[in-house]
Length: 449
Image (cartoon, rainbow, N blue to C red):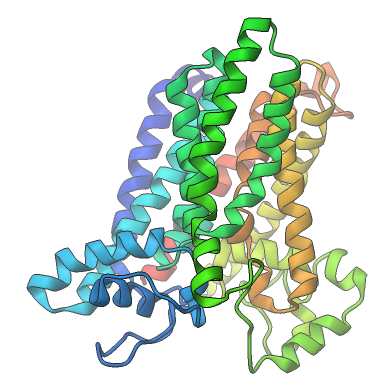
């Protein structure tokens, strides 16, 4: 089996991607537009403005203007909501069916989720990952439940993730020949990612490290002069687009540059998580988290661990998993443990990737810079805002491409000897393939049922 997958990876991976697109489209048809209710809140009656994600879309469609206030979700940059409002105009205009319009917007977002999978695959190809590792990595992203959740939820996380991925992809593609078209694509994607969600700027330090290194070590003097000019163009394009919304809202509405919407009526939850020890937050996950797909809202201490919530929200979002069939409960727990072990293995690969002298320094600076900044900011965010909803993997999706690239490049692990290398490779690949398959069978089927 391994030999066939190794030889036929060039035809297998496109087939996996096509199936992934089909499943995401089917998922959108089968579920309601509000299945994943992250700050969607109420649908507007067209007379009273609602301030959730749904209301933001309706506001832009109804009034054809950007808001001069930042109540609720209106503090977010507007790109996702502008695109969604355009779709609403196409669907709601002739049908006057607002729920149908939101269903179509959900399909659009699920297509965006597919393009996230596609660009993860393209990144693996760009790093010359091939054979069994390419198949396993593609299957991992194609089945990843987080992308179904992000695609099915009508907010800006999925589009921001896609644009961040595209930025990293085009930066690496630019490195090969220093072509103007690639640096322009990267600049536009960087600016638009922040015009979708401001936290996209967290990938900027990794890119900055990469750019500084390439300027110091360009190889040839004439190339240094060329890339210096390209950097200027990158900044000229990306910075105004990326910062436009923050500056506009600060001037027009007085919104602070570091504004985050406050959460009310969660004092008990905040107090419980704030009183948890550092070990409870950052140590091993609670047993409850390793045996249930749901956060424990009755005993917040059972859901205080950040890594436990990382696992749960990657696989099951926040309670939308259909837990009524016993066999699915059992398999769900199996998937939790497979994913936890897989994360430990991929983290070990990432550490080995950082130490490997055969990997280009520029690639390490960008990928590990993105990884480190995201993880540090995520932990800080979880402590600063002690709520279960802040411990969600959708905020740091970009750590997955970094880890899977490290797996695909596959430097030797510390404990790995030549005699066991092939066995380790097969076990890792089997785990990733099993994860992708179980994710589809376990997650998609129960939700539809």
